[in-house]
Length: 109
Image (tube, rainbow, N blue to C red; front, side, top):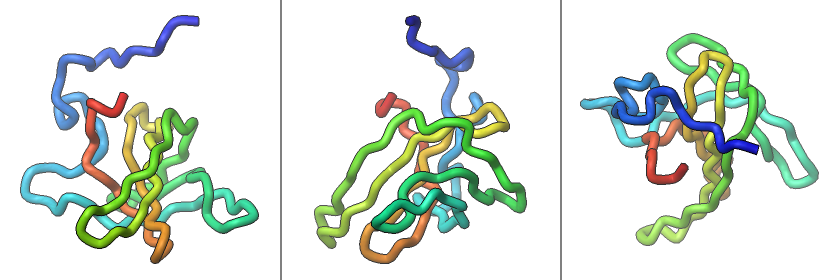
């Protein structure tokens, strides 16, 4: 099985149309996420709203945990592929339940 490669591999996230923070915007942006609720609570994103549009998550490409050194708070980050053909990093803060759009980081492929 071949590993999927982006046709925009050599472009920056903004040029390739990847989600994330743009110049002059905050590092994370609060967003509304529609998720599958498991036995704990929100577990997997199914769709999210961005700039007035509802984007359907076609698949979760990768999931990882991050912990803030300053606050010790933990978040779960989901790299998702949406129906608009773009990939986004969206995160769920474990303490507050708040979802955010994260800067897209190609190094986490």
